[in-house]
Length: 394
Image (cartoon, rainbow, N blue to C red; front, side, top):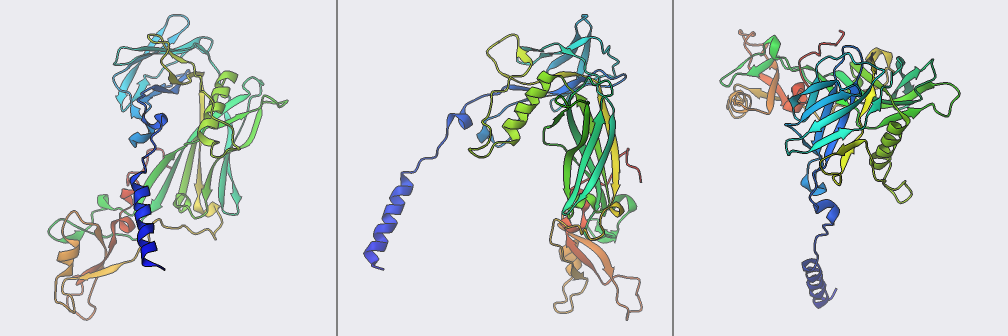
């Protein structure tokens, strides 16, 4: 190719690059910090109510929301009774255990630290029917969990669910040793990092309605899918499902929320709608508020699924590529103390697993070195906790 043509092409490319300006539409640069209110006024006997407050942020900020702290929140009923919530930190507010009258209506009152007042509309209490069962079915590439429920009185018709997954898992390698900063010592029982527990909250809007059916029955509504290779089911998996009965207006709000957050992505999808909740700023009527507060009882059910209930052909895929290496007190080639150089210094991403002994040495009980691997392959606590949950059934 002609050299002059190459040079000319490069100059044009550089000129074009110098004329490019980043596109920053108002949607990602405009300043807004609208209040987001999440939660349900729990009218169940002896139950607490938890409300989460946060603020919206710019799309360009790099965070999804910021917690709203320092607010004063109370539950109010239509008979002038009031119940205060406590700020427990990070935008979470919780009431004491309450026994509320299900024949009354309830709303939320919020006073934020910037002097603004917010009220939700009074809501009729919805007494949620019990969960009939939570189960799972085997698919070709994993398991699908589901929920069954019904209202024999044929009153509810509108349902919402959320869940918490909890599972126990293991690191790839068992570590019997650790560094104390000066030497490699036997790992105490309370410092073992082989078995851990982790959890995950539902991140989708889970809704179903029986309004168009002759009976108020929800059958095998899908909750979450767990892949056959998932670490969640390598040993034992638990699913705690919470069920909320809803009014039709609340159901419509959450349907729009689901549409706006989960069902957009192409020109053929439904277009986003303006969410109109039931929380309003009484000190500034023009100020948008995001959220819909409902009132009612909450039902829940937990199930456990053991690995031996699943196909034996399913094999867990560990999230890291793991190999073990060796570190000797006296390297056969260099004579260097690899244990002291590689494993002893703290903090350290290399963790000793098993000791190496010389079967030909008279001191066979004294290690000549150790196998080791990276922290991700040895220490499960970097992805969970070694503390068994209080509800966990062995």
